[in-house]
Amino acid sequence: MDALLLSFGVIFVAELGDKSQLMALAFAARYRALPVLVGITVATAVVHAASVLVGMSVGAAFPTDAISVAAGLAFLGFGLWTLRGDSLTAEEEARADRSNRSAVVAASVAFFMAELGDKTMLATITLATTEGAFGTWLGSTLGMVAADALAIVVGGQLGSRVPARAIKIGAAVSFFVFGAVLILGGIRE
Image 1 (cartoon, rainbow, N blue to C red):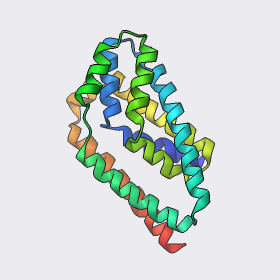
Image 2: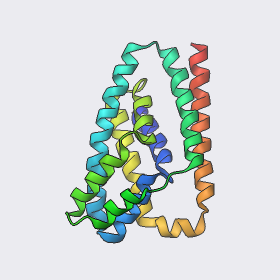
Image 3: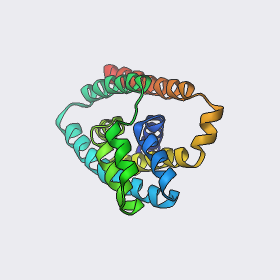
Image 4: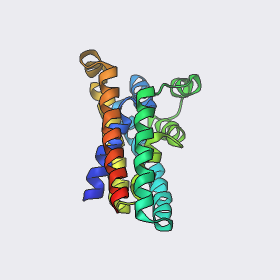
């Protein structure tokens, strides 16, 4: 349960302002929300399952104190990445605009490609080095889907009331706090 809650929180925060949220908005402008969310869920479940397997392999191969320090440094990097921000490339926008397939297939393929090497994938790998596999997978998947659902359902209203910069800074600060806690924990072990 700890892995699920931690992964949900970390990935939810990581997804705020991420290019996947921008893609979710683009798809929702063209398709109904439910098929888009199903596509996001399918792609996220697959990518995060692979991420957890990679994280478990890394976690088994290295001492936990070194993993904690490395994970903490990674989270500090994710904080900086969040401050830098994400945007859709012209190719990603075009992929969302020109898709003639069903919303589920279009969203699944687009999100699968977008998530490869993304900070949410890397954060899931990092979490899986020290947390339970199933909880990390389920929590990270649900966290990402919840953040993208938020973008679809209330993105327009939230964007008009809360500045994007405030959301970006809040997410980055969360990563910095998680990173500092992990580094301190790794140094103390």
